Length: 387
Ligand code: SF4
Image 1 (cartoon, rainbow, N blue to C red):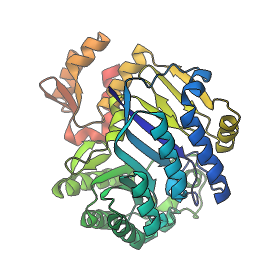
Image 2: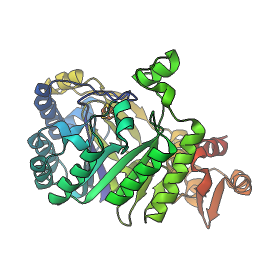
Image 3: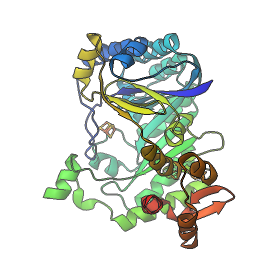
Image 4: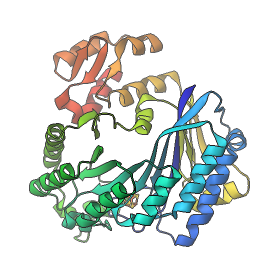
């Protein structure tokens, strides 16, 4: 049996963060139930809908061992709607769930909800903490404050959910060296099982991105840290998390022993995953496809018995090779050079030798990995390998 990951996209948020350009919308709560119903229908009818969408897929010999409900802010939904989606999965796939993650924003977490999540089978929470500094959270348009994070963790622990992941963003407006170190200090004090640290990317389509381009003061674009400061923040995180017992296993991810994300590892290892919901992406090993981004169009299509799949792409051998390098080298475990050379009939020895001499990568037997101090320039190394 092969492992399968299931992703469910919930594209709704309470407000729009200033830096965000995801396909998520702020809608009335009345839209949640019809959306969840459409997701359940898509899950139950997945075989026919995939065929209609031009995808060759069979879940035969595959066991769904991870589920990730992401967004958006899926913790906004009534827990019964989330439970319905999980039940639809149980009815439609061979399931042996080891990890069922829900993305949640701290201010949406309440005792009753958390108890219902645990009862529905959710055993991991990915908490959108982003920062512990109230002035950064406010400037970014986040709804929660530092005290909400502490409250959320105690509520989740009381509900029996101890596998919690924190997200932090390096490079928020108004972030300083002191406030970044204070956020890392608070995080270590709360001791989550898993940590993701993302470098702020300024998207031109976000309100903050527009302000960077056009000027203005509303979203604190002038208070963005510099590239050099962000690189230093990343190095601070590496050092502090390592000292606190976390192992970095991917460019943006750290975990306590045994808590690396089973689901997210599938993306980097190119293992199959099936996505449900508006804008959800899927990968079978040989094909990639995605549903329509617009939630209303998605619900209309599924409710009418039509597939919501918009893009089906066959993954060519060249693309697969590039993905192996891009995704494989994000992991600190590295890639197996022998396997890649054999599978793709390529010879990388000379380039690898050159990059190793330049201190960009490290070799350990057949394993090739980015050198510890070069993680932030991974793209340059990969481009060199593909040349
Ligand atoms: S909560 Fe996440 S998805 Fe929603 S607006 Fe903020 S950054 Fe975007």
